[in-house]
Picture (cartoon, helix red, strand yellow):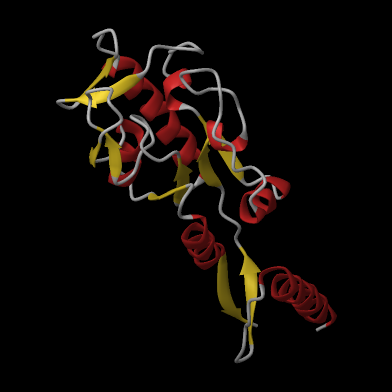
Length: 194
């Protein structure tokens, strides 16, 4: 009985912490069990200088990204670099289902290799969601550049995003952080009767 009271006390501490940190209400005699899920994220969104031009697209100051980082729950990936492409590199866009750079060289093999590496990391960590760089030929979700290198957008997904989606990983972009946070909370906390 004493052991059960200790467990219930610890769960109540976790419950209070969650309520305070996430403004989440748990009612009806249930308490949350913490099952924090790791999140795959494009490295450039964390401020890593891995873009084709050697820059980044940092959103590292976002409150949700900071929380995940502080909890050590982010898995940064750059499929293009992980697939063997240098920094900086010639820009690549998707043309007829191929990753082709502005000089006309086919880089599809590198993109596929990087996508496989990202998927391996996601599977190993039990990832259920990813925050990926919008419009990227690797990480874009919903829209990518059309292959003309004139910054025209078309409907479509980057090569890594296509693979992650096939494995049931929910994709968000840096413009969908609120939705990503809601999804993460729903995946990370379950109600459990004590």
